[in-house]
Image (cartoon, rainbow, N blue to C red):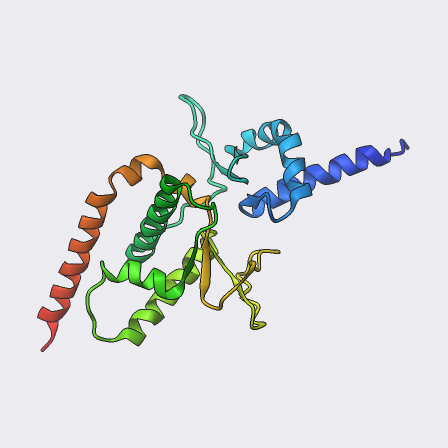
Length: 226
C-alpha cells in the first residue's frame, strides 16, 4: 500500500474543506482566512469539479466572498436537477433587499467605509415609507423582525453581537458577528451580486410599484371591514 505524503494529505483536506464550505453557502474571506486562501489557490480545480454538477464558482476577491450558483446550460446540454434551489421571496423581504441594496450603492457612491451598520429602528424607518399605516407599531415591528430573520438566514444581513453579553448568533457557522449594540445589523456586500446594477437602475420604478401594491392592499383591507 502506498503511503500518503503529509503534503498530499493536507492538500486533499484543504480541497475538501473548500468544497464543503461552498456547498454549505457563501464563503467569506474574513471568516476563515486560511480557507479563503485555499479557495483562491484551488479555484481552477474547484471549477472543474463542480462543472459536471451544473454549477459554477463565483469569486469576488475585492469584496471577499465566493459562492456556487447554477450554471446556465449551453444549447443541447441536458438539463440537470437543481442543486442550488430557487428561493421564492415574499413582497416584504424583496422590499427589504432593495432598500438595503440602495444603502450599499449610496455608500459606494460616497466613498464611505465598506461596512454598513444599521439599527433595527433605522431599517424600520427605511421600510416604513412604503408600508401602510396600520396604527399598530408593535405589530409592525414584529413583522419586521420576522422579515429581518429571513434576510439574515439568506446571508444578506449579519446580526451583530451586543456588548452587553447577548450572543446574537445568526445560525451560520462561526458568523456570530462583531461587537455592536443589540439590534444592530451589518449589510453583507454579497447582496450586490444578487441585486445587480441593472435591477438597481430601475429602483425608483420598482419602489413606486411596491408603494402602489401596498396602497392597494391597505385599501382592500379597509373595504373588507364590516
